[in-house]
Amino acid sequence: MSRPRILIVEDEMPILDALQYNFQKENFDVTTATSGREALRKCQAQAPDLVLLDLMIPPPDGLQVCRELRSDPRTKNIRIIMLTAKDEEVDEVVGFSMGADDYVAKPFKIRPLIERVKALLRRNASDEGNTEIIEVDGIKIDRQNHMVTIDGEELILTQTEFKLLWTLSKQPGRTFSRNELLDVSRGEDANSMERTIDVHVRALRKKLLDRAELVETIRGIGYRFKPNRG
Image (cartoon, rainbow, N blue to C red; front, top):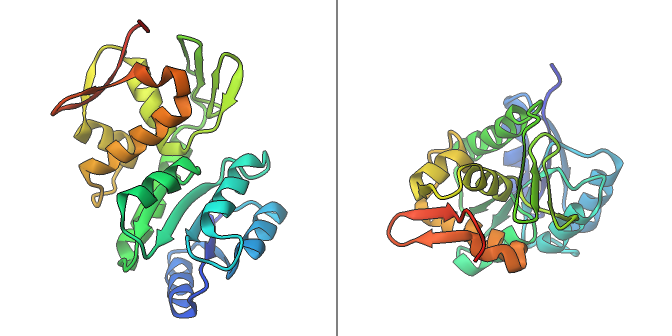
């Protein structure tokens, strides 16, 4: 079985070296980049399975790299985890809206980060071969191809946003607690917090535009998908 391919994008060499060493020990095929330009070039030449992407790198910065990867058909399905020294919720919202699948603040512990990467890749693999399709209120969700369209126009979602939308829309009217949605979106990652779901839901609603009201907040509990727009 082929080794998972990961690109680490980080301009602080001690951090880069430590990440490269530890991921190689875990049998990852590791490549590195120290700037946004180099990261984009390497992704376009041979798309990795996942990118660990530092936010504050030489231009283009991490947000721009994330945006460009998501807009390119060759790289739009690469999993992206943002690394940043910032720890403000607004930065998470911006990162997720650009297409990041996860967001890790520095300083971080390497072992939990590695498990987070493995969990994200496992969730991606577990979706393969599923042919289910949901169509509701002009939204079509194709789980096999990881594609969402609204009135025929493709909507680019992160892996987590896709899983949340799929889970909620598959059982319209049912209220899901934040903990349930954490289980869906994070798999075996024990480091998640309930407020992370709120960040992902806000990013999802922003992308849904006039369909945003379909994802309804249930105060003190979590979220549900409305059976009908009204």
